[in-house]
Length: 280
Length: 325
Ligand SMILES: Nc1ncnc2c1ncn2[C@@H]1O[C@H](COP(=O)(O)OP(=O)(O)OP(=O)(O)O)[C@@H](O)[C@H]1O
Ligand SMILES: [Mg+2]
Image (cartoon, rainbow over all chains, first blue to last red; front, side, top):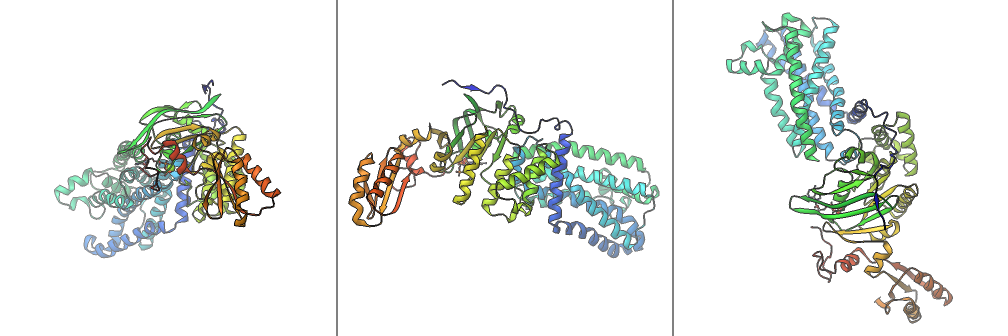
């Protein structure tokens, strides 16, 4: 019996991969992002926390602390809302780790991994699909703030730039959550670990009070905390440069944010991919 | 002959479990290999290696001409995988599941929809196509999973226990589907715990146990090796037992036995014995309650292949011969 191993590959029935050029990765991410969005829309309870959280936070802080911190609730709302939008976005960024952790234990990831697509495509798709979640959170926060009396002091171009910036930041921050989601054994553990990341980042920032009022040791953390720079940039974009801390410029803060995003993705995307390969 | 799948000395260890202890697999292009083995034998591990989901600790494997470790992407373009556990997305509808896979395989939106509709019809899921997969029965999920693995018209298909959990009619559908795939030139590697299934479909059967190949033969050869089939007859009336015994003695390879008061059984060399006995019974006008040609059970196959010793299986008496490691 003579045997010969195939030296020339069997013709594949998958459409000749002309359509699988450099744009194929983009196509795969888009298809998988659609999967995330479809699942999201099918489980509207996923939006309840995203939408309620900014509403509750804004209400609590403005009406409980507003008088004490700023002397008047409207002034405090103007100060607080840009920071609260950032905080909201940080919490929504953390849901992806929990979702992926449960998703990945289902068999559908086996299917993805047996397909000729990039290993990272399912994770990229999930992160991209979550942009819809971020947009909802931003919209709810802004609209509710406006109902309470928040007033944008700049033009729509700046508001659009603010939204773009915050989404870029959210997408970058997502990778920390994806990493945690790939490392942890249960989605409950993911939740706990995510909060450990988010709390020092959001509370050790200028979200609630001007950084200059904080104790020295905290000020040095606040100064290097990327979230502080995101918030300062948000204030600059929504309220004008006069609302930013002395000595900061909008351009400078935007550069800081961009730099932080590059570092976040540069560090956590490879880590997340490493943990993903290890997990499965 | 051309090998579509060729694996040599595959090993894989999980912690303290040696899932594969060095197995060889060969599947000729356009044929069906049945991989037969009890729980924990290493079937799924072998399939996962061949489908590039995990890498072997040692050994090599080529699928459709490509190395599974060095060229996983090319391998993935040639294969379709139906895993042991349905890998459908429960929060999507049947159609959405299939369209998504089609799009990931590079089909156009219209092409993916057309292919999805075609496969849903083929797998009797057309009506359920717009329902969420989580509302599907186990058998429907399996079929959706099978459909999903065929979207790209792969040249090599892995089916890991494809009929477990299907009712007999749906099982027959899957068998027919597998046969039609092979008629179109597809190579199929199918794992199963049922000798009957391997016998019905496979051109060649590889039996594995404890991560080792313990037999590799055609279904005919394997059955000869393990003592073949038994013919069982249960006449309606016990008064006919004597006459039936005579007929069975004429075709059997041994003396007929009487495992139950109203039942006779005899080992036979091949299925022509069945035709002979059926004719004899009809000529003698003996009504029967049951008439069956039985394959040896998997237990019997393993018992006779391992002789109760070769791979550390339990001894002959009623103790479970096959146990998970
Ligand atoms: N990811 C894993 N981690 C640890 N052990 C594993 C893993 N996968 C498989 N095993 C072990 O390897 C052995 C072979 O498992 P495998 O799933 O390949 O068997 P199988 O032949 O498919 O069995 P079954 O008929 O039950 O599906 C078993 O003992 C199993 O417990
Ligand atoms: Mg298995």
